[in-house]
Structures are given as structure tokens and as C-alpha cells.
Amino acid sequence: MLGRTFTMSQLVALTGVAASTVRYYVSTGLIPPGHPVGPNRAVYDERHLESLRLVTLLKERRQLPVESIRKILPDLLELPGTGAFRPEMWDQLVEARSRASARTAPAARLLQAGVDAFTRRGYAEVRVEDVCRAADVAKGSFYRHFSSKEELYFAAAREVADLAGRRFLQATGAGGEAPSWPEPLSPEEGLEPLVEAIEPYLPFLLDLMALAAQRRPGHGRVLREAFTALYRTLRDRFGPALPPGRIEELLTRAMVSGMRRVVVSSLLDRELFPDESAL
Image (cartoon, rainbow, N blue to C red; front, side, top):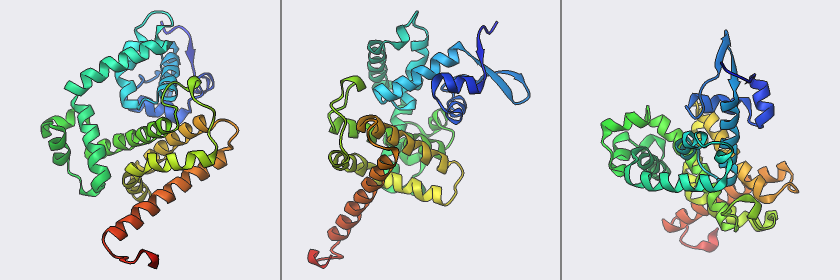
């Protein structure tokens, strides 16, 4: 017996999670698929509803990447009553999983090695064996965790967005839970911390943008996901007084400022402009 069920539109209305995001969570195994009730039609139950609410809270209040949520969500859902929604339980599980992951989880090591390699060299120049060597994982084991280099790249793109968002929050004194954050920032106060947060990952983001512009399958979708995650972080930190258009403008300015720094400093380092006044 399924008990209470929901259509996709009802699930979206109850959770605030877009239908496309629900489908992404299902496709990546974060939440189970719906129960089929006809051709191309499914319904969802209370467990789907609870899972989506938890994923949203963990992303917004703890800034956890999807890969981390995937590890702790089953344990949270097993807690009785409302225990799954208690922040202290999130912290306990994250800490326990982090300790175990640091020692034993090859997927986490591959993901970090992928972020590092793709940021330094770009997608085209990175080989699976390079990532495996850096992560100390046998090449044959790579495909137990990622079906291809492209899947690792997509996971790394989402991780980069989460890392940049967390760096920005920490730089602006908002590393903890949202209710305890300082007063909302003004755009002038937030621009420099945002540039600093994005700059380490700028080569990766530019590489992803280039691949999306070439209409490589899947890259445009992942690019939207990454920038949507960053946008939501900025929206939460700057507060409701800042219009959405200003947030987009700020994110664009930060990207341009970061590119200017990286490109100009690179040119100066190579002495292509030996006289800085020539600029």
C-alpha cells in the first residue's frame, strides 16, 4: 500500500523544488523513482516528500554538495519521528561520514582529484589515469564510482559551485547556519569576497562555459545547475532586499573581475607587458 500519493505538480507545490530538479535527483539516484501508474506517468509518496525537503534544507542551511547529501540521506530517513530534521543530527552524520570518507571513500578522493585536475588543465587535457593516480585509486576501480570522465567532470562542476559558495559565505562571516548569519550584505561589501571565492575555480568555470557554448551534450545543463547553486547562495546571503537582477549582475561582475586578474597577471608574469604602464 502506498498510502498518500502526490503527482509531480503536487510534489513541486509542496516542496518548492522544480520538476526538472526532481527528475535530476531521480536520475542520479539521490531519491528513488516514482511509482508508475500509467505510460509516462508516476506518483510519489511521503518518503519522496520528506527526502526532497531534507535535501533542500541540507543544501540551503549546511551548503552540502549533492554527493555529501547522498551519503547521509538514507541514515536520516531512518531516524524516528522528526529526528531527520534536527540540525544536530545532520552535523553528527556529516562528521562521521567525513571521517570515514577521508580514510576509505575512493569516490570522494576521485572527486577532489578531478576538481584539481580539471581546474588546472581543463577537460580535454585530463585523462582518467591521471585522476586515478592523484587519488591513489586503481584505474579499474574508477568505473565503480563514475561511468566516464564526463560524469566525473559533471560531478566536479557541481562540487566547484558548492566550494565557491562556501568560500563566499565563510569570507562574509556566514559559515554557520542561516539564522545566525550577520546582517545582509550590500553589493559593494560582497563583490570582493565573491571574486576571491570564485577565482580559484575560474579556469574550471570558463572551461565549462566553453564546452556549453560548443553545445556539448549535458554541459549546458550542468552549467545552469552550477550557476543556479551560486545564485541561491548569493540570494540567501544578500537578503531579499537585493533584486534578482542585481544578484545576476554581481555574479557577472565577479566573473569578469576574476578573468581580468587572471589574464592580466598571467601576461605580466610572462613579461608580455614588461612595462606595466603600457596597460
